[in-house]
Length: 213
Image (cartoon, rainbow, N blue to C red; front, side, top):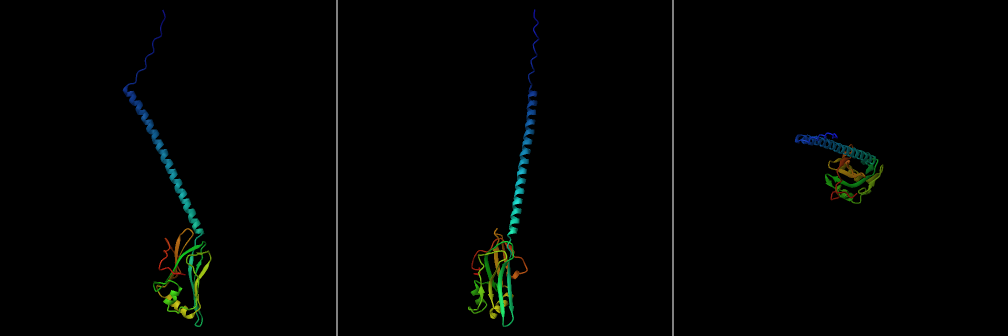
């Protein structure tokens, strides 16, 4: 008579509480996994933002350095003398900066009123139309670094004295608006000789007040 082996005990079937515990453990693992995935995503986004910020700052610094390397600086100059029998007066603009200056427009006011051109200036000063003087044009041209343009000159004593008197009066201004190659613009004025040209958002558009010179 053979002895049959005793049957193995059947594994206990999981109870409802065991299943709930297993589900809870799974959910915890998934929560931990989702948390770290979220943290990694946030960290990646922060790194990307910081890299973009650094790139933008570097680009802005390069742009500032480049702009400084081509910075124009236009000065208004008046030279005159009156020795009685001899007199002379000249008006000129010099670019003492390191970059080209794109001249947008020139404006002149006598006693607060715009003057359209040099002929109009003579009329405003009650000077004969045939008064001798020399002129050059500067509007809508480019001044190279170190370049000087003498826009007006005369050695006619009556005209020199009339101009000197007008320049001494308040409301007489010769102004020039110019821009760099990056379209950063400034306004140079004859009544602000001891001040730097003032930065402006843009030069005035051509219009009735523009001087043809």
